[in-house]
Image 1 (tube, one colour):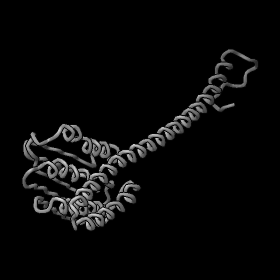
Image 2 (cartoon, one colour):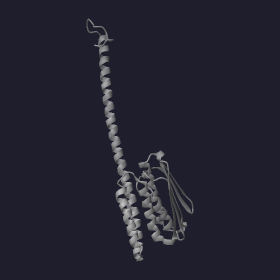
Image 3 (cartoon, helix red, strand yellow):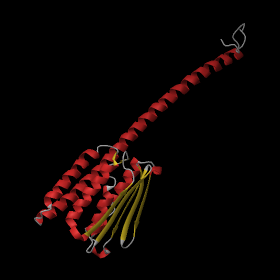
Image 4 (cartoon, helix red, strand yellow):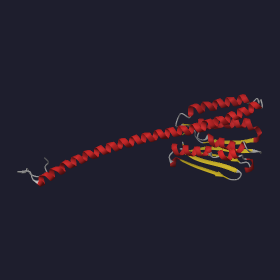
Length: 249
């Protein structure tokens, strides 16, 4: 049955039976190994597909947490202007429509143009400038080649929103906010800083909600980017809050 097998026996012997059984065992073991491997690969693929679906679901959920919060704050700005019967209200509504367009269509994609994300930030800042007028001093600096660069949508906006929420909204004096975005190669270096009010002016509700937006961003970074593709550094002193984010684009 095989060249190296035993010679043709004159009769059935124990030695011949053992050798034949070993030969059959090799065949069965080989086929079993193939079957186990195929089953393992199929199960692994099912697990990976499930993990990807869970990841996509959680990312969509985190985005929906950002979007209504951002929209709600903008509506508050419009409400304050309408109470004052301000002539700035129509301009605010126009800016809001541009933000809503980005909000509705950009967040459906995993990555979006960095230019659009920065334009969304600029629209948000313009809204806040209308609201706070001369009280607000915002400096925006953008450097580098933005063409073809992609980023997760609504990822940078919460940093800006946080600066206004815990800086401009509570500060009784001049408010200084600096935003800097620099593209170097395949990475974006994003920095934002703002001065902070005295602790005595903070309400319990402000202190309770101060970390919600930032924790959301950290989760989105963990889910959407590899550890080597980003680095987030947040520093806070008694008078200043500073965020540095280096992220692959």
